[in-house]
Image 1 (cartoon, rainbow, N blue to C red):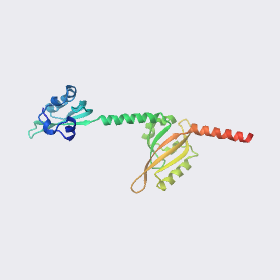
Image 2 (spheres, rainbow, N blue to C red):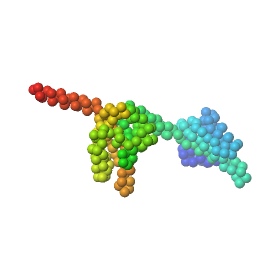
Image 3 (cartoon, one colour):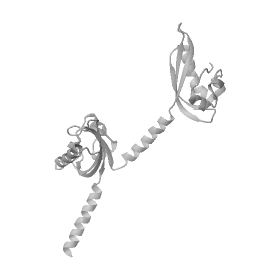
Image 4 (cartoon, rainbow, N blue to C red):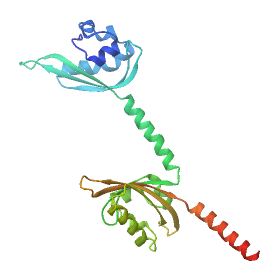
Length: 239
């Protein structure tokens, strides 16, 4: 087959105009390492009369190299005979790079004492999302999300009313962000001191729809500060 049309993006990658490319074969524009990857899909589309495609690497004449997803769609005439094939190549490299950046960010989060949460602004604040490192507290992220586990049930019983009151006041005042300090319970019943920094999503009517925040375990810092306070108090009493 021969080219009959390329779009503006193709002109830039080929370094030629649509008129210059029209009539050329794939082998006239691409090295064998590229055509060997996608021509079998093009031939299958022609022979079978249905779309074919896949992913392969492309080396363009202008020196640009990309990973692309190909889709070849046969175009038929009134008699059902395939006359042309529409070829679409979509750059998947940026998508892959985005996934890699997300993976790297996830690794940072998983190794940190900060847990990411997204809560529904409903009674109990059901968990819509939580990062995997909630396992530090003994919880399973998938179980919390799938069951819409009420976040308030993770709080120390003596802190629930205070925290709920602070959240309600923040939402009633239309605050976009707020910070809380309280205690969480692990699955085994251990107590963790945490600091929560949260942002609120409101609808057009000003009603809170969801909250998302970072909950950081500051237990060690609190214990160290408490020890310093007790030491200073003991020193002052002996002096």
